[in-house]
Image (tube, rainbow, N blue to C red; front, side, top):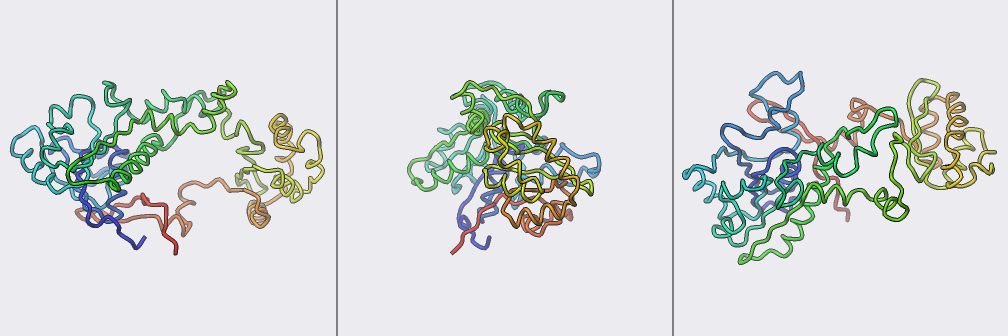
Length: 356
């Protein structure tokens, strides 16, 4: 993105881990001056979350780098008068402050809204909490995946509950906070600040989407069905091709199904009473899977992908990350930065473009 709409914006980032720092990186990527304040001894805990291959303790960890792009880092201990004074000076001309302290720490460090507004009356405060501002519980993404139903739905009957491989609740909470802060900026005045608070719990519940409605409207408690979709078939079944590649389909409409079975030479399935519409396909998905799987083994992956894409049938090869990052479109979203001689890389926080 060539536009930098927030180049006049100053943000102080007191947050750690992923959700809060991701918000800071979002604004930094759009031109904001983001000052990340870290404790001189403890820093951000994600700098200790390292792969076995990350052996140089002086380098940023990959996890830390993922959420701390284009930030200036200042080490301050806010419990000391001298460092708190330095913090106060930086705060005077800030537009937004980000934090994710557990309950009570804001009092200890004198960063409650009223104390901050005494220094900067128009300051917008963005807060990430685990279970809400009044809760004492320490929360990480995994805890929220467990408590909000995500793990209960993820995995298979054999695997038991499985966490998602990305800290998705943190990511979702970050998006919620960005939206709230953007609204607060539209309403911003110099005389009166605002607090925009997002809990990981609320962000998770608000992201249950159709699974929540399935339960709220029909009393359906999702079962662990792996990649499958409870309402659509075939959708998420994994098929092996002639050249041992793995593919999947998202057949969300009857016309997609007709095109798929026609390509495979199984046109009769489109009029078979067991598969003629989505509801019947969901009921009979196991039988349908066997019929499709046997036929797909006759085709090479490239042929299936290329020809079905030409027919506008939703199909995909299941790719590992080394395959993903050979795609020019994925590489275009990689952001690189040098820190003390170390080249760090992460994916962009920006997935939108302005088109004229």
